[in-house]
Image (tube, rainbow, N blue to C red; front, side, top):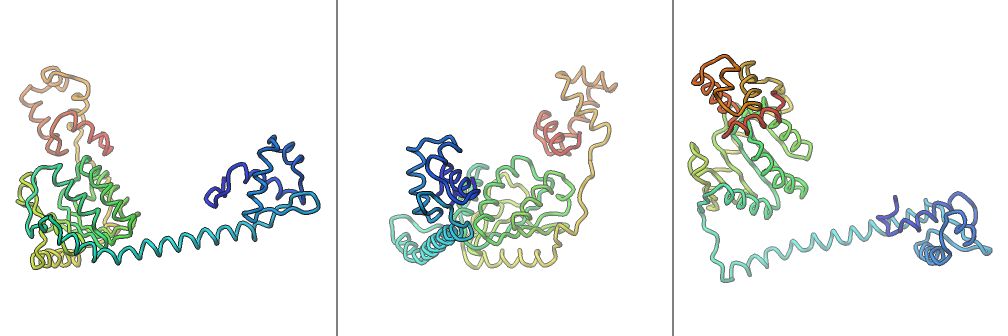
Length: 324
């Protein structure tokens, strides 16, 4: 049904298409040809006439040329959309006034420096900041590769900003591009309008919203300790300058060779394979022909390469990345 967006029902469009094939049709002919009841056809024809898609002549109904009738409906719909967009855009003028009322309310103003601890609390705050951003997002992500759970958590926040038309710039470490899943997500962001560049060694993790609020790790060496939301203008300006300096030395990821490299050796693959099939380490070690201690060392090495916290997670991530 092509005309539904113009307010034409499926039944009305069916009748209109029938009339387009002939010069004229009566209610009886329409009912017989389309298998419709007269009680349905008559009101449909009346509405089609009001929409300007048919007119009655010499006891029959004739379709109006689509170049005239349908085009008129399209123009009316576009005029309505333009008016609605102007109304929505005009609502921006209320932001200043409403913001002043908010600051005069009972809520205390946001602190210049705010500590946020806990993984979920940090994601919730990032979600909030992304929701209220209206102009620009800048981010540096030094991790490589990105964890699957982090990609899934970031996707709705990032895509929402891009759908709203915000300028979105991101810097990643070059090594991240060697991971299949990480590169696929970064290219997904690029297709949606983001600008993504890479450098050899980013200075530190950061996300900046509208050049007025920045989120940085509480301890750059230990992300689990929490994050700091910075609103103090002088500090934010310094963080923005650091991002811009890094951005100038970065290169677009489209100019960097892709990563079909698989960091897992044949032995690593055998370890993951046996882990997916065997429950006990003793049995797995015998299958590989090594000692129990050696097998457990192999497992620890694979977990480290995949940045996985469990054996099951390691097997899942390796399969998702196409490494096994």
